[in-house]
Amino acid sequence: MALDIGWGAALVAGVFSFLSPCVLPLVPPYLVFISGVSLDDLKKGTSSNRQVMLASLAFVLGFTTVFVGLGATASYIGQILRNELPLLAKIAGVFIIIMGLNFLGVFKLAFLSQEKRYQQEAKPVGLLGAYAIGLAFAFGWTPCIGPVLAAILSLAASTESVTKGAALLSVYSLGLGIPFLIAAASINVFMQFFAKFKTKLGMVEKAMGGLLVVTGVMFLTGWMQIVSYWLIEHFPGLASIG
Image 1: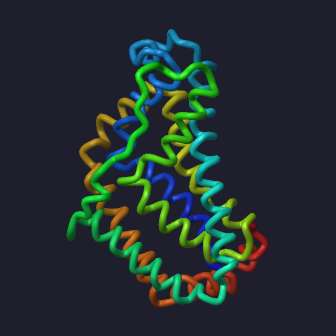
Image 2: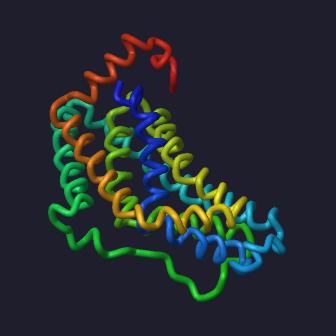
């Protein structure tokens, strides 16, 4: 039942991942890198919008491929260990709370401060290169996305089927990917937004930490299932989703 409230949580988690301090500031460089178009040309609109959008879509499909695969794997393992799910939920809850406290600045975990970014001297060639960078993004961008993704994967592990777990991570990818595509379609608007929003990146990090702590507590106390059953009881249509 956790998936019934997981749809919204996954979408919000994806958006928060996009707005995180280690993703949002790097959107313009990523657009330049994957499309092979200079930032000035992007701003002036002199570049091919089709080229930029296709490269951005390939990039989004790249990290979506990895996240969906992780969701399916988490669900599959969850089914194998179904008898141990109550214990695993508590372990996941503790882990998620620790990640949240790290974001809140209560303490800092060294391994989360080391960013593993894909580096390449030459620009990728065509859509295949942009897709490969998307794969690398999903595997390597651990400091901000990792803890939030871990919470969503914990939800996926508690779902009833591999398909639902994969679908949950698809929703997470939408939350992360749609803002990226919007930025690609209107880079000037995005740059104006970023100029105003960058002072709030610290608040976003704190909000992410708070949500992670709440999610972890819900796993520990069993409230995740309680809230799910409450939603199903009052909104029966949710039972048909997924």
